[in-house]
Image (cartoon, rainbow, N blue to C red; front, side, top):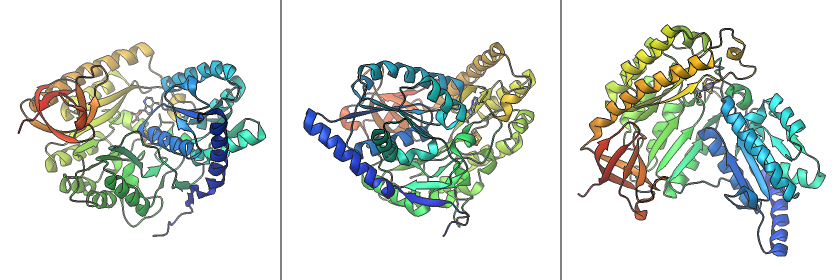
Length: 478
Ligand code: 5AD
Ligand code: SF4
């Protein structure tokens, strides 16, 4: 099972001396000042970034920091950025701008910026030149070097830059401080080889590299033993797991093994994201055969309903192929929840192309869609294309798309009325602490009359209302 290419697997043990050094320093500070130094981590973007931030927090805790939710109390602030759309970058930059005032009040405050935004050279330069109070910047490929970066910053006193490097390493054994005690992310691979013409990810996260099966199985086993109930496997394109390494097992094999790790325990495995060009019948069969432990939900980003646009997007499938996968899924899992990503206003998208996308929504009837207005990303092929769509046309199409989908989501949720749905309870909802929320197997939000004992448990809910964005119910009495 030796990797056939030259990917190397490195271990965080190399960082141990830096972790120990920082811990000694932080303990000295705590003894002198009667309180520990505090770390604040702000995260933008996708689940992969959430997972990376849990590693940043894990390393910070090992270095002797305690975590805080208030940046003004922090001695260390790390902003984990996203670059997938312009809006995410602007938001991060505006938060980073605010921290200037904190640094002015507390000069010993350390501020670091990492993630996808700063893995682009132009953004890194911009921060270097315009934000002199930022102490260190590190790209996605240097996440595991955080202890060393902080030590270097302190010992050398200079600003530290670890630009994004196209490395092929997979870092193992990074400590993780998980947000939840019952839901967990597990990265199974990093990077992307697909180069969809609109997407920045391959440039900021590098080429695909997969973790070894043994490492993933060990992590998932220990999560199940620790009582985790909902485990999401992460990768930009999980269907090509292990391909670059030439592993003699594929994603479907991995999933089947994880589904059978602890047959007697109640847990669900999820995964995201899949690429339609690689979604195999084998994978769908594994899901169908292991419905007890694999959530019956498939997130399959379609991006557009027009073959012409899919071609320019460099997606390598057409609508016929996409529909075949959907039809096969529904033939073996009639109740599967299907979700997708749609980009509106890709360069050159005509009214007819957009109509094809609406037509696909009506044909497939997704349970939910994640829709995005096309955002040009510097140095991607689509950003250089002529016939960019004007902002007003993009937003008008976006609103029409939502109106069509909202009616479909309602239509999909209505049939849940008077049915019982098993839900993993998350706790009081954001807007009303008397109403609890949770997620169904199909990842639908469910609101109900829970209590604190339910948090982190599976419970049956009798649904009385199926609405556009959520299901509403009461705890089943039987
Ligand atoms: N503009 C808008 N949406 C984008 N996505 C990726 N790149 C862009 C972009 N430049 C969307 C895709 C992808 C999701 C995670 O983000 O739909 O599936
Ligand atoms: Fe981006 Fe395409 Fe890779 Fe997804 S598959 S991360 S959309 S390049």
